[in-house]
Amino acid sequence: RRQRQMCIRDRGDPLEFTPRAREIVAELDPNLPISQVSTLSATLENGAAIFTIIGAMFSIFGAAALFLASVGLYGVLSFSVNQRQHELGLRVALGASPRRVVRLAVGQAGAQLALGVTVGIGLALLLVRGLSFVLFGVSTAEWGVFIGVVGLLAATTLVACFVPARRATRVDPMVAMRTE
Image (cartoon, rainbow, N blue to C red; front, side, top):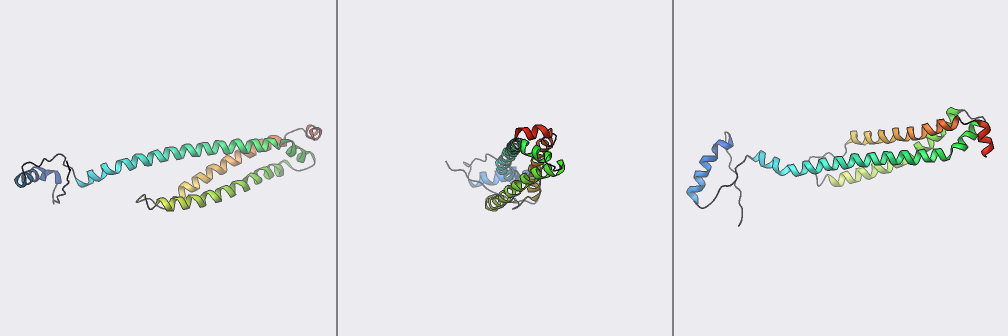
């Protein structure tokens, strides 16, 4: 059994015209049932509800992925700087200032972050451009989101490198010399 839809344009409240529309349809064909009556805006909202749910799910999954990426980035960079703790302590023992040693560790991680962010934003812009053909009304680049993600990853990198590097500069120079 096929379902048909009919749209009626009215100047007043569309739902007030419903009884008259039922009468007109009954005059034309008394066997035609009228099951649902709604305004066009309500019908469009109901049709778009699934896209709202999917959008919310993508937002939740994106936030979870960003959290996992931040935790992973912190773990890898912190481990990397901890592995270099004796080297950094030795640099301090040989006369490098603690500030310079910390700047070295953070700078190297910052260069890696810059490369990753450059590649990531490039890929994201390509994907967003591809998705803009599918998702109507979505801007091609949400720069606020990009800046927020980069800011979070940069802060994670700074903390992950600064804390272990600062700890390495406090190693007793004699202990650092003996381990090498």
